[in-house]
Length: 246
Image 1 (cartoon, rainbow, N blue to C red):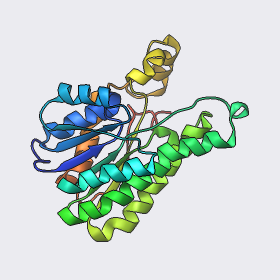
Image 2: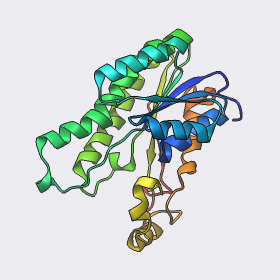
Image 3: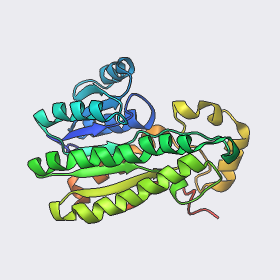
Image 4: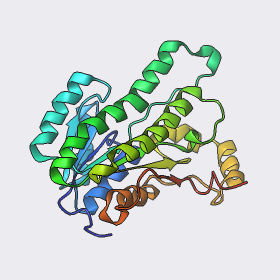
């Protein structure tokens, strides 16, 4: 798949570190120019320097309507072919510690913002005659162990993926999702160091281990490429066999 994204322009949210950083780097390796999004400009600039040519920092808060509108005015200058909705917040507190506003805040970032970015991206993609939207959901969209805010938001994002795929097919824009399992990112550092979780993954996944952040990038790059032109409305689990393992 070398250079299959040559000349394409992508936006990857939450790209300063973790899965988003690795996804952005892989899309650039495939030939794309990638806008790296996050709220803080400093780590974005550092990430862009680490990646090198093809990486452009674009700091804005995806849950802020005015900031998003301003960012898309900038994106419209060059156009957009690929949107990767990677940003995701998490709040693992139990139900008895949560309030109505906590769910609203979670949905604003994990569901409403991806909807809004997709809505804004569509006319830019139509203008360039190419469109790929990839939502980073989670295996939590299919299974649950509590974690109600995150689980509900990712379930909604999976449903949004299907609905957008159905609605945008006429324009040739594909909409798919990648559902990560347990990945050893910076955000999961404490969990990665927990031997109980390592033992759980040894029993519960087919591959018996954490995923490395760079192990998700092939799925996203494929769904962003011309090779995936007849795939839409699909969720690809990248989970070491977690969902399939009994």
